[in-house]
Length: 76
Image 1 (cartoon, rainbow, N blue to C red):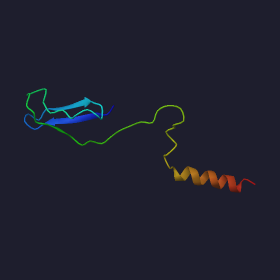
Image 2: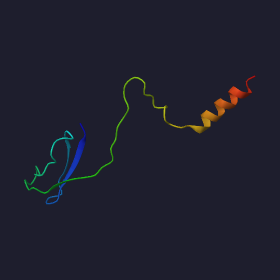
Image 3: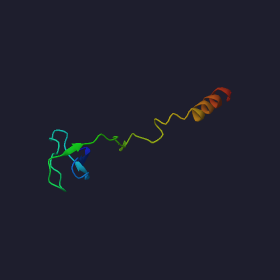
Image 4: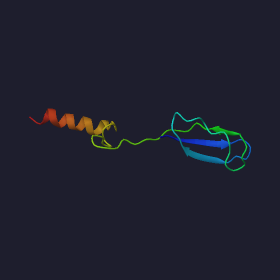
């Protein structure tokens, strides 16, 4: 489930809520009880976990790749 950020336009209270994507957005502020909550746009963060994912899979280290290919071609 994604985490959504909200800010109240009345009292500027900010909160993060764990919600299903199918749930309706929140409207009432838990601090001032006004119906002035707006959903904020924020950067999504995720991590690939489990077997088969490595931190080096998509790094694109060109220096290491080129030196490995030189060694393979000149190793005769």
